[in-house]
Length: 384
Image (cartoon, rainbow, N blue to C red):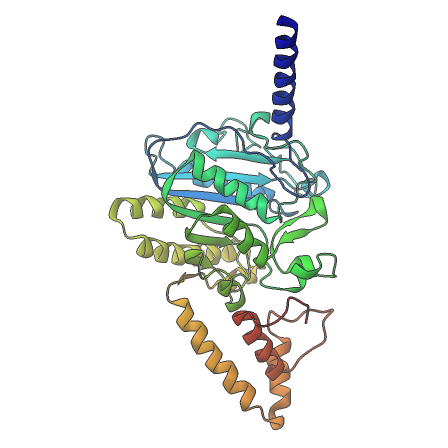
């Protein structure tokens, strides 16, 4: 009898160990297959910021500086604002291109942690953050595909568990490329990965498309107070129409953006926590970011693209009315096309962000027809 009990206990222990091994790894299809054990926090924050980012080949130094800037602005004794990070570093080959930069984390590895003032390392000249192997998330890091919706959903659920809040803000930081259904259909297509966000050089520059972003947020089961795009080209109709039911506000630039002032972001969230005026705080922050980019252009006169920032806070509750007006406009263009102005129609279509070098050109009438179909969901998920 004792022998049988021993065998049963041994089997249970073996199964338990095997299960724990399975839930601690990362595979290429589901970035995290299990969540990092956390200690639940009883008190709700007013705002929990969820920074989901990839180095993207040439941004690791900027991303580390952004995290350090935010961490310094956080108040150690005030948990009203919390700032959690999931960050995958670029490949070693790409990191070596950043002259003078010594990353705080290992190349190609995924790190998950909460940014606090103590995360900033002020003692080492070339290192911004205090990161250890304990902050590494998963075991198959280089192969982990951040563009999988369940990867994003897992991180958001983790944030909700470890840092419960009245308001959740998802912040995406990397290069942005606008909207494309082409990338959703086949990521191997030429330039397909360049119309999305979170480009990972560890897996061939593949990125999180707008539809995958939407799917990840939906899988998390969370409703966002704000989605903040710290990346270029994301404030356009096609992107916003994917997000109408998922977030109260979207903060983004329709053009290029050198980066956001993360210190000002945290400071404005503290003000919103104190006076309850979130919209006013984020409107001030939008202005601060345009000024931040303008200053960068003055530091480097050759960086004229820093002047193209049109950082905008969109109230998504009002956005359906904008889509209605847009539909009226494109319907008018379609029904009033005049062949006498063919050159003008063609120019407008080819200079839009929907133009791809590997896709045939379309005139404005055709472009508007497709825009209607994308926004209102009547077109099949096929490339142009």
